[in-house]
Image (tube, rainbow, N blue to C red; front, side, top):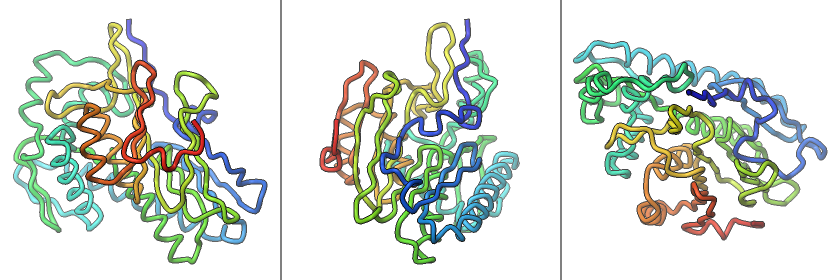
Amino acid sequence: MRQNSCISFFKLLGSIFLFFIILTGCKSSGYETRSFYSMGTIVEITLPENNTDVFEKLVAKMEELNDKISTETQNINNAPTGKDISISKHFYFLLQRAAYYNNLSSGKFDITIYTISKLYGFPEGPYSVPDNETIKKHVQKAGFENISFTPKTISKKTDLKIDTGAYSKGYIVDLLVDILKKNNINSGIINAGGDLYLLGTKENRQWRIAIKNPDKGKKYLSVVSFTNKAVVTSGNYERYFIDNQKRYTHIFDAETFESVNNYRSVSVIAQTTEEADGLATVFYLMDIDEIGKICSKTNTPVFIYTLDSKKIRMCGWQKYEVSH
């Protein structure tokens, strides 16, 4: 019996903060929050009331960037092998970061794994487990070594498919933060479905964010406080389905070509939303020892909630924690 448990944020308006709850009451003290649907999720932007004239600019920029990246991805995925496809500076950056995360994870993270994950119906469904022959046929196409790119073009050696969704949403959030800074706005929050950047302070106090516990309703896993940084969570309860009592998540290991269910959630604090976004997925693919080595190298605090409900704080997470 199959249980389909992947529901979009758009349908779950009551669960906008699936991963995080902002504990500083913005709406009641000189801040305004606006919500809209973009990039397949609910986006919330909170700004001081005297800076709300920039809202429309932010929404328009997010839509522009999302459309551009989506169109370029589709063009690449639909292109024949061996053909040079033109790319923008934004997509070139995303490909560079794909190479970085691929190397950092020793091949576990790979944007070409979409060649396999799409067979299961990810990201939006309908979901089902493909037969072994279909998987074997597509495994031969996947592999980061099967794409080559320059600052202007990309080409494929096989009929593979790519998806930069593991970190491109964070990249777009960072570009919106740049707009805020260029408009001399030094306080605010951008929350794109759990890709969260906290800019400046509120009344000279750092923002406080609670990481929700997926198992215990209103109980928090951790409460952290910081400024001018991002926090992102990857978990096994956002996009998944269950088939024959096995949970299939949207995160796939490019070494095994299989869906992984390693943790309930992995949260990362980083200087940019793109880095927090990408590393949250990279770390989800790794064991605890590997995570420890890499988060020390990248200087990114990590909070892990294990399948057996243990809480593991690594690489300085405690420094930002105000309650647990």
